[in-house]
Image (cartoon, rainbow, N blue to C red; front, side, top):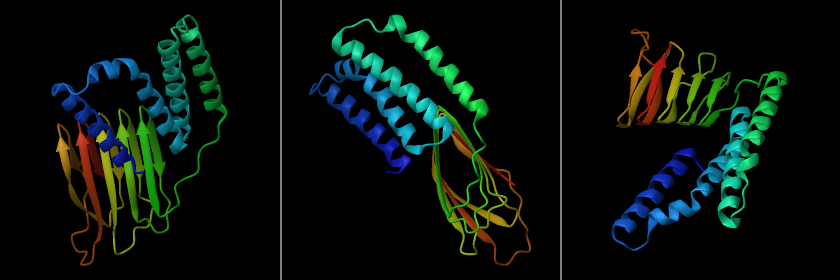
Amino acid sequence: MSSRIWLGLVFLVFGVGFLMHQAEVIDFIQVLSMWWPLTLIIIGIIQLVYRTYSSVVSGFLFLFIGTLFLLNHLFDVNLFANLWPLILIFIGIAIIFHRIKRESPSHTGEDLNTFALFSGADIKSQSKKFRGGIVTTIFGGAEIDLREAVIPQEGASIDLTAVFGGVSLTIPEYVQLEFSGLPILGGWEDKTYTRENDDHPVILKLNCITICGGVEVKN
């Protein structure tokens, strides 16, 4: 499922929940106070699905903390006495493996799918036929470099979503941009320059949704 669909479902669930609370159909505040650790668990699962190094580390951390809070709430046991030492141990292990891990290979596929939740992504594409993709950042950031990617004459399109985060996109000089989208307390900025004498420019369409976030495009 697309990361943008996940984001839309989250806003939809909370919107319907608070609407039903106002209509006194359910006590949504009580539901949240009881089951809020599930939010951390769901965030962790989503992070693990995307399988990048940063998302795996933060995914396990969210899953671990959410599970502890949920068990503590359901079974009324004191798990918090060991919580902070376990978190420190987990962070230490993550730092050690981060130091010895090998650098991940560059993106070479036709489609790019990047999701950064409370984390960051740094991707350099060397695709021989870049068609577009989906980039989503939520309380995180992403740096996407397309200067070595080959964008075909028919163009490409990218869906960019930044929620309390940002996306920095670097494109080749021969590419021209077409922006569309929905800015909500956010926006996008075009810092590119293109060749004026190009009669058949390659078009890169950017569909941006920014909610208290931003998108910057340069070359």
